[in-house]
Image 1 (tube, rainbow, N blue to C red):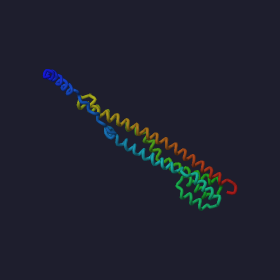
Image 2: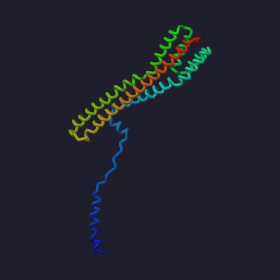
Image 3: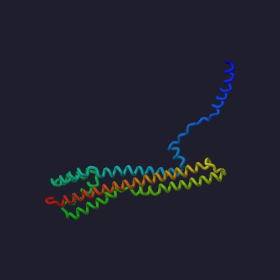
Image 4: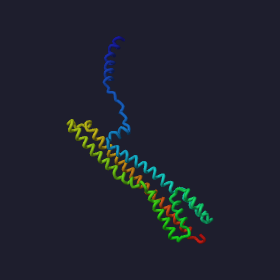
Length: 234
């Protein structure tokens, strides 16, 4: 038994040394989104501002355009019933209570009742142009953001390249570790500028589509109102 233990001792020592020499693999460090953004450098500040402005305009315009066409059908039915009953004052009061583009257009038309139909139509059309302008307010800013956000990203690329060459000139080191800071500025700013530009472009076109649909409904309701006034006994 003693001889067996003596023979096993070297084997145990060999296994122990082999285990000790096995490298311990550490878990990869987790990099947060905020850490990546910070790597983009100072150029990320204007890009972040453009992103915040684009999000704000999109949400604000989306809600405004959606509310502009809500309950239009019920409103027009009530207006026609009141005019048929010759309750002009109540019809005007209903127009003032409803914060709808079509309500302001119809209100102008009701005030012109008794005048030539052409004059009523022109007055409604003028008000409609102002209402369309109000719906489109803010959309040109989205178009500008869609154009200049990628430019800021490109500017960040230039700054990153400048930083790379500056670091090399100071250290004469061309390793990836030495130039990684400039590469971060270059890649993160370029990607961020493109993402913000693409989002602003999508927001701009999506809202334009919704404005077009809202304007189409306004024109259809205005036309129905004019046709209603031209019917006999109106």
